[in-house]
Amino acid sequence: MNPRQMKQAMRKMGIKSEEVPDVEEVLIRTADREIVVERPAVTLMEMQGQKTYQVVGDSFERARGEAGEQAPAVDEEDIELVMSQTGCGRDAALKALTESGGQPAEAIISIISSR
Image (tube, rainbow, N blue to C red):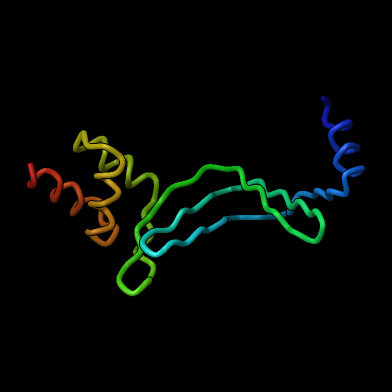
């Protein structure tokens, strides 16, 4: 079905769909972590008064600190740097960066010294 036919069928079923403009970031918070979606494409669909958001984009996770406080943000470049210098996986690099307050050098030293 082509997109035009899809929109017509949705309209007949009472489903409204529209793009949400100028969204820079979407943040999903849980008790112990955050999922960040960068440069997302967000679509709002409304049916029978119920709103549903569809989010598509590149995402990464970061841990949250004590009492739900946000842990230091970890840049994707820092994660890749730690991974390339230590040969560890993404999860280990992210954990080390979070524990070191986002400092790549400290994270690298921590991973190497724990071997």
